[in-house]
Length: 98
Image 1 (spheres, rainbow, N blue to C red):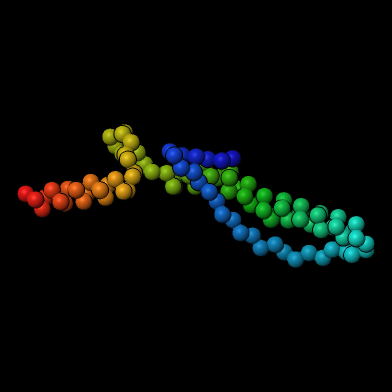
Image 2 (image 1 turned 90 degrees about the horizontal axis):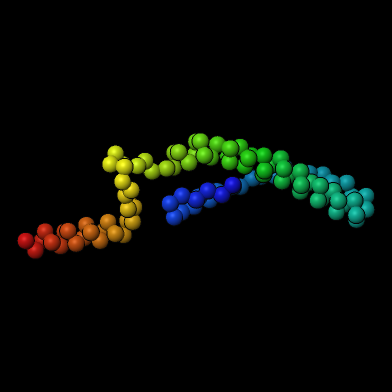
């Protein structure tokens, strides 16, 4: 599932070390089939199963920890940092002129 929130998105980066595998080399077609089978096994056991658990917990645990809590006023707050820096700078300039 893809999740997007308030003009943004969440991405996950995952790295997995795969265990070594021995593939019997009887002939070329068996070798190719053994390699493909091993890649599919790694994909299922080492990549997809662990990520499935992360995605299951994402909406109930991870996203709640990352989510901004709405202010008590129940109004959305503009999180544009550059805009806030500009207002702060203008306010400081105005105070210096009085």
